Image 1 (cartoon, helix red, strand yellow):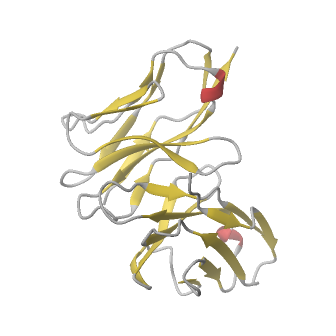
Image 2: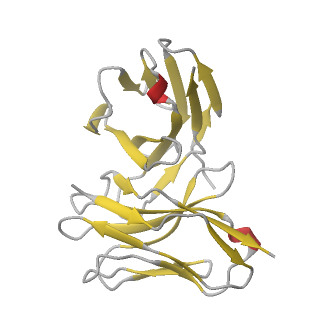
Length: 114
Length: 114
């Protein structure tokens, strides 16, 4: 069964550093998403991406965040200058067109900012 | 805005016990409702869904019925197994589009013992 692959599974970074979280969505999917879950809290929507542009973003997704689909296969989330409160599990998801397609999630990247 | 409220965990049950995990939602219109499951070290997997009132989603012995009058989508299973131990997330998708973001609850950890 096709999978969404996320790398790395765990990343530790120093406050103020830039991080890039990587995702390889399912190849024929058209919609891409990032979510995050701070430990013990809800899974929160960050951003959705379609047709090479952001289609929706949440209040969390401020100027420190950006997304890119650089080569037609990878989908990346960049945090420019990490803060302690960015520590969370980040999930990538993709979805095909049409109502019969569900959302497929990756296994997540645990980001720890120290 | 849209929101999902789940019962807090962890829920600990003996094998073959009956499971209920409560989920209620707040949304305008007619959202679609989902249950996702996360096994240790894995991504979020779709367990079941319902797209309109009174629909019953079912999969792997789990069931949930979309109750618009009580704005609920409680997850049930008649006889749990140790292999059902996981975190269960209730989620909704607004009625604005089939590729809209998901809004999640906090997740409920289920532990099943022999």
